[in-house]
Amino acid sequence: MNVNTLAKCLSQLGNINSLKIVKLLYKVGVRGLTIVEIQNSIKTPPSTFLHNMDNLCRLKLITRKRRG
Image 1 (cartoon, rainbow, N blue to C red):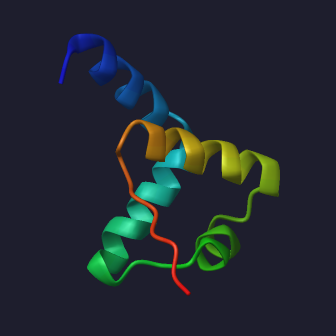
Image 2: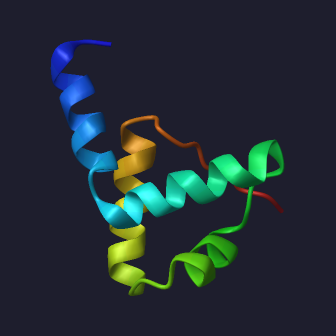
C-alpha cells in the first residue's frame, strides 16, 4: 500500500460513522450483516451512510456481496 492510499484509509477511519461501521463488522465477523442491519445499528441518514459505505469499499477496507 502506498503512502497516499494509507493516508486516505486513515482519514476515512477518522470519520466516526465509518469507524462505527468497521467496528460493527469486525465484531460480527465473517458472517457479515445486511446493509439494513448495519444502517439500523449506526443510525445515520441514508445519504451519509451510503457515502461512508462507498468510501470504505472503494478503499477496500470492507467488501460488499450481493445475495439473491
